[in-house]
Length: 192
Image (spheres, rainbow, N blue to C red):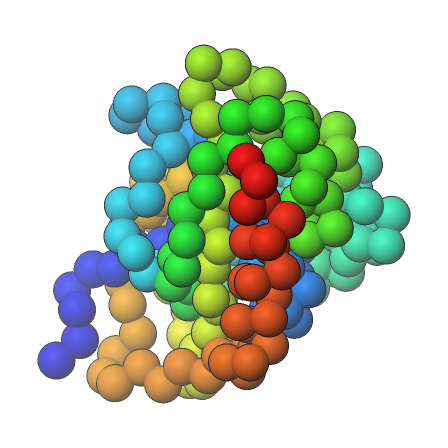
């Protein structure tokens, strides 16, 4: 029997695209403006990825990824009330980043610019930046949800209707590929 409700993390579609290709395995969070506590917390260790389009900014992405914003927006049907839910993620590790030195070590492992990453770190300086190392899976059967007003706003988490039946997931990276990326990232942070 399918769950009645599932949790999803709202993320830029261009970031979900990078996750889906295995180009990065990291997510950065401080908390959405509309979060109840104004702080980010991992509500569930596994969740669906909910694509967002409106706040994506090319200038906040490394040059190599800037054209991806145009591609994502071109593929987005703004008149549709259906939101495609194509990927699922599991948190493998949560890392709290408190210094610019730690953050700089992660620069090769994500698509954001230095300015974006530093802006995230310095916003609410008294709080650490949460970096989630995630294992991402493609949902093998097509699934979309109807847009609801409650999805609006600057918040990280939303409740969605899960796919019906037994969900088939395929990892976007092989076990070995993922483990190698995980170990490499952990090794650059081990002195902090």
